[in-house]
Image 1 (spheres, one colour):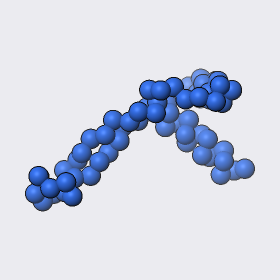
Image 2 (cartoon, helix red, strand yellow; image 1 turned 90 degrees about the horizontal axis):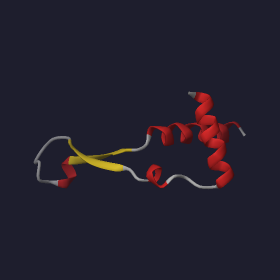
Image 3 (cartoon, helix red, strand yellow; image 1 turned 45 degrees about the horizontal axis):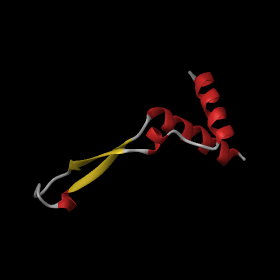
Length: 66
């Protein structure tokens, strides 16, 4: 799978673009305790594309090594 991600990363870097669907995150409020109607008693989690997360991880590691 790593070789496929490397190919995708190479294509994205050559085109200097990220697919639109990868930029969109789905957010969900998670109840953490207390009064359920108070916004301060919820935290938000974001669900992103797994491929996008992996590519971000690869890029971050590369930048830290340089």
